[in-house]
Image 1 (cartoon, rainbow, N blue to C red):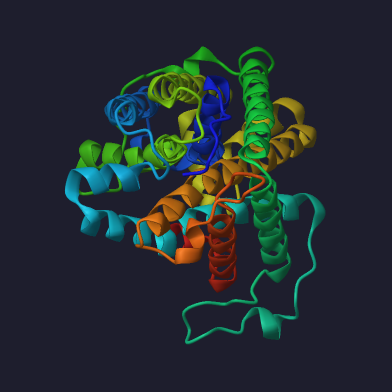
Image 2 (cartoon, rainbow, N blue to C red):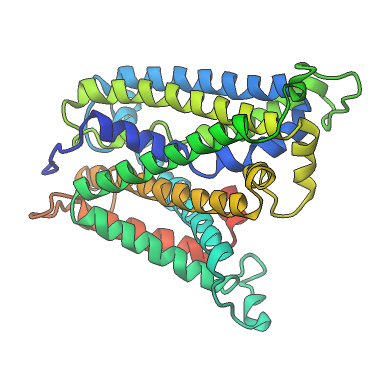
Length: 381
């Protein structure tokens, strides 16, 4: 393929964990608590979703140990189900699934930066202008320009060599893990919380669930939030040609990283519950722009704690954006080599040994998606 294997096991683990740990761990606990209304069931949702994700990682590790080529799932599907299925997967990934994911995570990064620095906005008449009533391309334009600049900057770093993308993944993931460890430590030692917040562990008699399916429906709704936070574990498979000893290291990285993230998520949610009872966590869903991690740290350190979480979310989403755009560009590179994508995307840069044109095409389309609508529209896509 022309790509060079320069990524080791540690970097592969950091890419997977950086992909998985975005904004979900900070935001999803409150809506999940509102659904299950029980500390024990909330933790159970994270554990069960983590085990299911781990089963997925182990299944993919088996396949990745056999097929270690650029493109990951595209290569898997091509060999399992044929070119037609792989074609549909690759093009749906490019048009919506993966590029919208890159755009939405980068958008969260832009909004987090906006909460700290406040970007300029256009006059209301321009902000509210819509195209066929479907999207508002000029809405929140300051955030969108910053978001696009972020995508371009990270794409440039990855264009210059996979090792630079790996360095960004290593630094950003290590820093976000250190920040989460600090939140856990402060929450359990200085949070002024109580073990009484864990009683009763199961659903209380007074619990009134939102869905007609009762507890089952509530658990299912909470699982959606948990799985969203675990998403991204499988993207490392697309870097099969650039991980050293890929048939050994990719399966190892999938297993180690997924299990580690499950432990991190359970630990930080225990800290949340220790500081904030489940009913208070659930009440945050009624307050606009309230994030459980922010409120937990605010109760410990005041506004300084809230600012710390804002910076941590900023760092986390920056790293997740980098870890999202690294692997997916290899899918389009592999497709182009098979004649199923724009032929120019098959180019491997002669000096940097990266899928340079594929990275550029991906960045251009993700930037157009950023302009096309709001964050909610991107995540819906």
